[in-house]
Length: 301
Length: 282
Image (cartoon, rainbow over all chains, first blue to last red; front, side, top):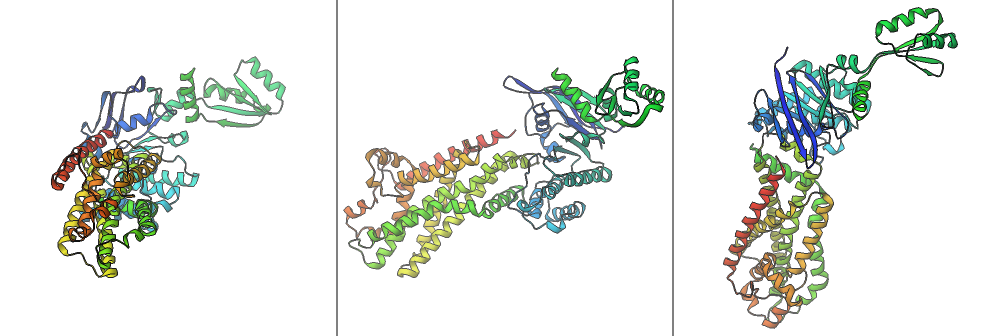
């Protein structure tokens, strides 16, 4: 098991009478892809703001490599914000060199690091372009490179793909995957796209300031989202009678039946028992969307 | 490259590359020059007691006295717009998550504003001097140029300090635009830059007497026109053009003491601004 890089203990933040973050505790391990999810207003952004030293918590504490000194933390984190924070009137090169000067001491070090990033993030062709003329995907690539200038141990990504087209989102994820593989960078992600968390090592879901679920995507899906299967029978009446007789939960949609088994074993038995009456069938895997809806909507109920 | 210098350079480039912001920072100056050239130019062509060359110097001195003071005010507001934009667009968060200290970040906005305001104001002054020399053959001597630059440096410091505290109350670009227009116009009128102070009522003149900008304008006008020229013009005409001895709460105060008081007040205000700006960040 990898060592703990970020330890959060009983973090609490109030705004007037609203408790935005309520006694939140979790751990992130080195090299882990950690997904922090929650609906709007759940406390995700407030937590990220505290962890990136933008906001002071009211109670609790957090440690990066067992240290909680602000300057140490700032030296060792990279942050990609939801908003574009590139300077539109400056070129890509200027944006990065100015960022580099806040982390590295000498001009030589800065230029060397810049040249490394230029190759790694493939922005050589537009390095002299002012950032206001970049496409959404190009700007995101530059923002990640900028956050990565100081060689951070942990990269915070606050909804990094919001507003991007599918192609740009794919490109962003390719970059992040490479960073994880090559540099073993720890990634702390918040996102609205649940499918992006399928490859996460660990997921924490927060709602109304409190952690409501946590675990690996597999564990969460096992607990909160069952696999179901969809059947198109040859004889609809016969199949409907079978389901009714066996008291199996199901839903009829057009010509098909969506069947909810207690577990995979039961689903398999249902299929085998009706194999002569099945024209088509399709297995529908439980998704992180189901987990999220179950956990968050369940919380509302 | 130090962090402070890097941040300062970034703010300066961000401002100068935004041509619209630069234009609007000069707008008050352009309007003021237009007012002088279109309406007041003729007034200066018939000043009794001085020859044509001296009238050229009087005109340039009178106009530039107002233009340069307005310049220190509107240009510094324009550069401070970078801070407001950074705050509104959350670009400032990009700096706050780096190891750079909050104090250095605040200081970088201040230095960038002082540098841009001072350099552009000095360039305006030198261009006006060149125009005067080429147009009427009257050249400012080196001592006067150096003295004017020293005075402009002090004026930039005062204007930037006062604007800085105003900016700490502004959170959006819209509010910033409104504040900029209000400050430029109001100060221009109350300080006797747009129209002579003597044309204003007693109450407004009292307000003007406690504002540093009216004293700055008066001092600069007198410096650029020169005592030799002013002494030749009948007192009634000088007063009619708004060149008077401004008092502070009815007291005659020596210019040096007056500017020392304004400097101390500016330092105090600047300290409050720094405190307020640093307080916004963790």
